[in-house]
Length: 133
Image (cartoon, rainbow, N blue to C red):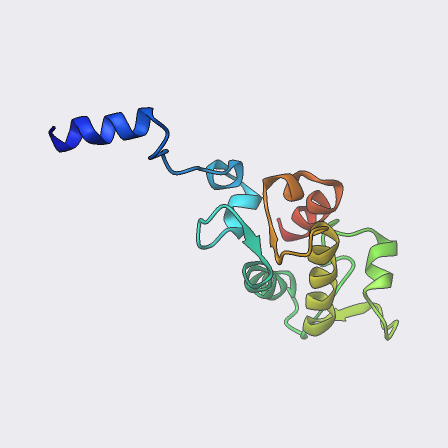
């Protein structure tokens, strides 16, 4: 039996299924942009890398902090205040990353350290994407 015929027979028998492609791997836009390794999942490292770059872009006055105005509607005033433990009206890079980490954890109810397409589509996943856009 030739190799192509054998592979076809195995695929038909279900022994060799084609590789699964997750909805996230096929996605475009903010979620796909966060999936740096294109594995169909978004892990905290990928989110933190993007958040670090985002913080630099948002810090228009280069003072090492972002205020609510610089956040450009990514978070509500209430969310911003909750992320500002020293109540100085700004978020340092560390405070910003702590906020992002908390949002990631909220979007990861199974605590597996990665967000799949369903978790990204959840209310908490959408909130994370709103900030990361």
